Length: 355
Image 1 (cartoon, one colour):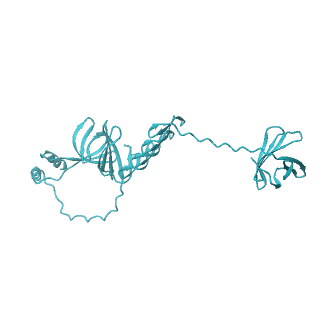
Image 2 (cartoon, rainbow, N blue to C red; image 1 turned 180 degrees about the vertical axis):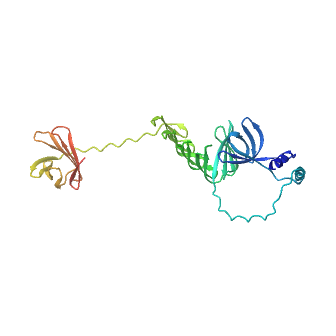
Image 3 (cartoon, one colour; image 1 turned 60 degrees about the vertical axis):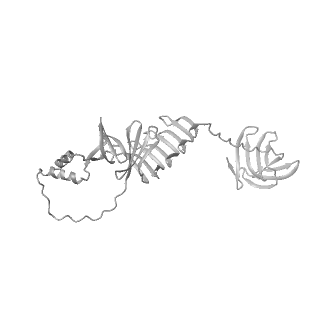
């Protein structure tokens, strides 16, 4: 019966037919078929003309528009020869209880109607709400409808997650992530009002990096690094506003302060509990230090100028070196007699700490 009605309607003159297309990725589009080519349909929608690949269409359903009175009369005549259909006289079923509000689901789909144009169709609960048109260079050339603020998802034909992005005031804002069909992250980028602004990372399907770059206001600003299949850096280029530039020079590390050679001389005396060191300046006694066998400070007195004080053996060979700061022992260096440095100690609470 439905087939006869549909056929009768198609025979009526002046009746325009619109179709509803359910795409394999879940998107729903309403439009009128205006042409057909190999493997594709040209469909006119309220957002503009789209080219749909037949392979991407899951279901196509005809939508019969409201009929004018004159057309209704023709339909009535067409129906007069059909077999009557019984009409139920049972009372209508009671209305169902109100359902909970449906959860809003925002998605988008990219369509390439030609080599010079790309369309991004935004949907709310699978119904198209807006379409962006881009040229071959990726520049936005048109917008139909209104893109609602929120997080939008894109899916592969298999149903696997493809892209997640957030739209605010009609522009991509915040983190955008694109995925391989396997679920591995392919791209991770940060946008601000539709422009790349922050780190941009591109990964291989095994998780290793392929490229890293830094953007500001949709232009390369900072280092761009490229990697080989093993994740090792193969190229590094520095950019300023999309132009190759000289990288900033690294600041040289400050040179360590040179220790002042002190004019202080020292005499040593072996004791039962280590050694005592008497310090003199221009032949006058200025202080002394008593260290145990582990070089811990037992006592320290006097006012000794900042700098390094060398201790020599009777044979004139360097054996120790004190470094004073604020009349306190900052460091003590122990040498192999006349040879290289053997050990170095700093002090905490008069205890020697080997460095």
